[in-house]
Length: 196
Image (cartoon, rainbow, N blue to C red; front, side, top):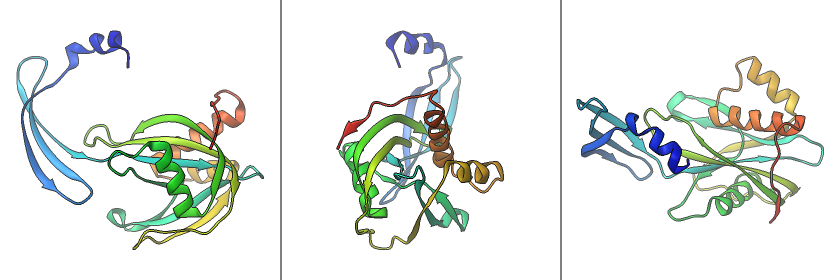
């Protein structure tokens, strides 16, 4: 955001008065802050601090995309998703994307492009996911983390669109990736591709 846009939003700013840590987990932290609202009154804001993550839209030579099925415990079901994973402290998002693609799917890519960030739950989380596209895939062995179980498969853009339309593709980051994939395929949007 430009400085000009930031100053245009100054009348909306909420200023932190105090902050309390509610939970410090190994992955997520929860906080409760008291904030001063633009009119001078105060309110409470509870939110989750997330280290950030990446998601990879990896396109096979036949135009299909590499996907995963993974159990998501909080919602007690398996979801179809693009490969993704959290950033380690200080990790470059591109290196994380390359690592996650290799570890979860076994694929490596010769060309990468950064599409930008997406914020999934802006009302209660600091999470930002960096969206990368990958091409020039070569298959290899997966190196799943301990306790990680997932199925890897491929699907066409048309299959993904049908699943989204039918309400079977409900993961927000995957729907964001689908939006990007559709606009790239149609030529409305473009990316700056770089060699790995």
